[in-house]
Image 1 (tube, helix red, strand yellow):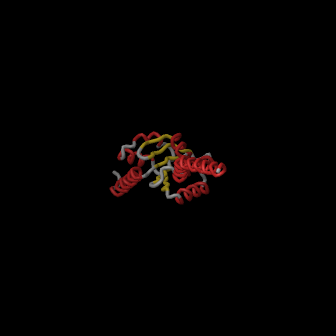
Image 2: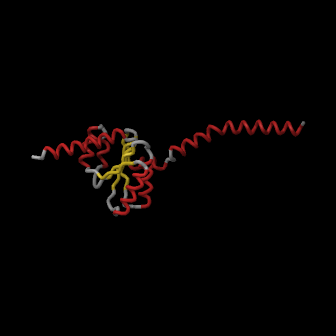
Image 3: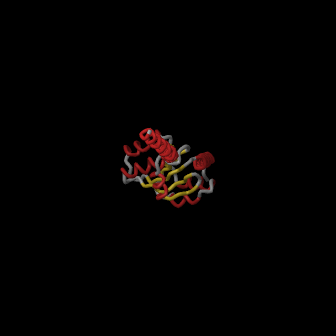
Amino acid sequence: MANAKVIQAKQDAVNVIASKLQNSASTVVADYRGLNVAQATELRKQLREAGVDFQVLKNSLVRRATAATELTDLDAVLTGPTAVAFSETDAVVAAKILNDFAKKNDALKLKGGVVEGRVVDADQVKALAELPSREGLLSMLLSVLQAPIRNFALAVKAVAEKEEQSA
């Protein structure tokens, strides 16, 4: 029979993983098999600087956490070596860093993830990673909103200049 302390430690780990799954804006699951120590260290450094929690987790513990959070669709990608990146604030940053790193290092493979409570596959994670940053999207929106006002101002200026020339 398993030791009660070991069982409690595993249950605590499942509770922590379940909490992170629920509280994260996005969670990305990746296969890290084949990364050397230097590559893994560089990846962890980039993720840490962006405020992303990156952990290698046992699939069985993650499956129990997905069952507790009703995200059992994620279980399909929980095979082989699994690393999980939890991003609590920005839904795009973890996907962007992992996708960019995977482009440079063939050993890292994106498996899927959870974005705002919805399970997504690897292609959807890659599509999310290709989106501009929040600041980029806001600047695009701002330029779209400013365009009509700018065009109106240019038209008024042109009319004023035309009247000055004719006067």
